[in-house]
Figure 1 (cartoon, rainbow, N blue to C red):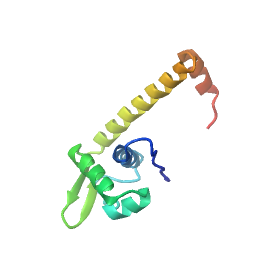
Figure 2: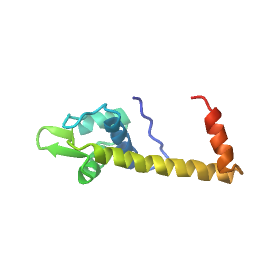
Figure 3: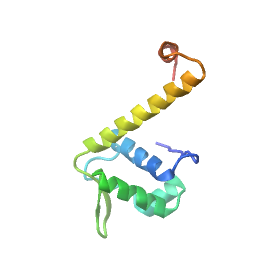
Figure 4: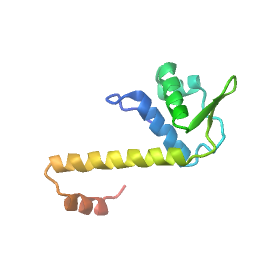
Length: 119
């Protein structure tokens, strides 16, 4: 899955969100190794320190763990990654509805539009 960072938002949280999405979609299985910090930095076109910070954040949250000298791995319990993704979904949905309200659309207008929208 190609991922493009939004340069108007902090990079580390976006990387965390993307990794959680990959875990939730089964692209990374429990206890599987993920890209090294350097590989991920190249993939995301960011400084390795940004990826390191993201991985450490996910480790504190219980989503990743590190094995010294071996790399970074997905935690056995991926429910935390799925929960984080639910929070992101709720936030993005709320932002969308707020933006639409600012344009003068009601919740019913937006629901109608979404029902008719084709991806």
